[in-house]
Image 1 (tube, chains in turn yellow, red):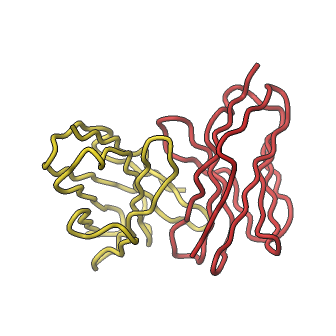
Image 2 (cartoon, chains in turn brown, purple):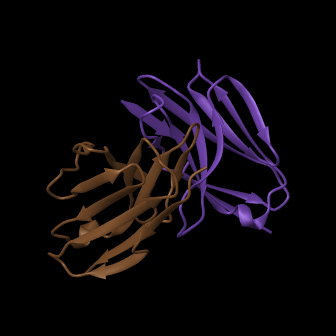
Image 3 (tube, chains in turn green, purple):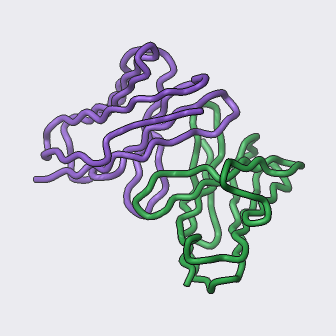
Length: 112
Length: 110
């Protein structure tokens, strides 16, 4: 199994600013993903973080708004850019194991 | 594309049995997952079915019928701590991320 940590665990940000969320996995994984979970909703995939190349974004999500880095097999970052109150959500990092997908504890973002 | 449906909310009594259903339509299929998520916490893995039939793991069992595009999660001897959201998720291939249903919020009452 993999243990995933995220920083920060929560933040309150002003409209128009940006926040970078860090995700660290305790073992090397081939696939890492970023999800968003809005209050009372299920998980929506934002993108697949590809090591050494640009992330693959899902419909409705773009690189300018959610730039992602994946410098190695254990670490990724997600930036939420030019934030608005609609970006208030929980952002979850995830990694793929052999028969299971693991999740970090999430970052709870509130945009004022 | 993928479409995963499950009931929004369910209520059950402590000590009872509850079955949470999930139906899916996917263009390709590589397994059906169930996750538990307590409020404010990350989802935690419960079960994985790739073949038809019932997988039992303690108080929790999961069933899959690929021909019917149907799965269920069975929780026995319900406890108050089982109050949580239960997420059904489908995988398309070994390297693609899971696609989640909207989740079923289960309330266990005394």
